Length: 195
Length: 196
Image (cartoon, rainbow over all chains, first blue to last red; front, side, top):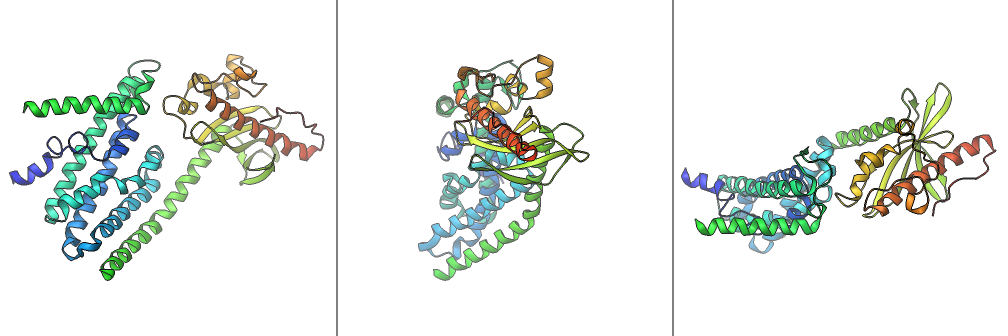
């Protein structure tokens, strides 16, 4: 049981996809302009990650080694497109803000990375838990980056404004994304070393 | 190997086809709802909105809607797009028959977050496009160009390109309405702010 639980918790700290594995940097930098955007992007990725992990762990034994990458990509792309259509239909406002970055989940290294490194060697249940763990870790990282950038850049948290007027504009734009990510990574690794 | 790949692709394709079929109607409905909301937002209250029509003006095709009060056309909602700083900037512009800008609404934009993207939310910038708010503040909107270019539009700070694109889209829409009304009464002189 403790083993199963650690599958979920390892995504938060030990195997944190953003700060430790440093995977999926493109959506991390681009969509974290606000806390809400980061959270939504994290949840969208988690949805794809869990489902693709489950399906890939089920089909892995019968897929010939030579074509395993194309097969995984087709599976992942299918889930991403399903997600895209569902979001467009039922949460059009979220779809509008994340727009371009939804289809890009297909090439997010986290999803294919977990399929290659974990799902094809482990059971269906373990893979699902791994998807939840890594997905939550990713969501948490994006939300934290989003909160920092929103506080500094727009003076608000989750859209709730506590400073009138503008913040430090640079933090809403790309340079701020790199700075925040860099500093958070430093803090994160310092904390890890102490442990 | 080939069989496996084909089978996976077939299964995935059928899953996608099923989801597409299920979501087709809701997607269409939500897009239409968004557009309807935008139209009624930029037109005077109490008008009935016509079906979509399209016309040509300065070599470009525009979609527009008529706002009818009884039988008479009172205003138009014109869908107008220009190139902003980060790609296409699409607006819905409500224009009265005499060419007065009634209200505008951003349909889609891809401007810089925190700068140009404020064209959809910046209070001072948005207020000057609304006829009612202009009446309150006494601001004039006669020359459709940003103040840097000698017009009446106050640009968003540090986003002149976006502001120019926005203004151009509005001015194009006004020209469309002028040419529409001109066709009807055959007396339009052609005097309007020329857009570059």
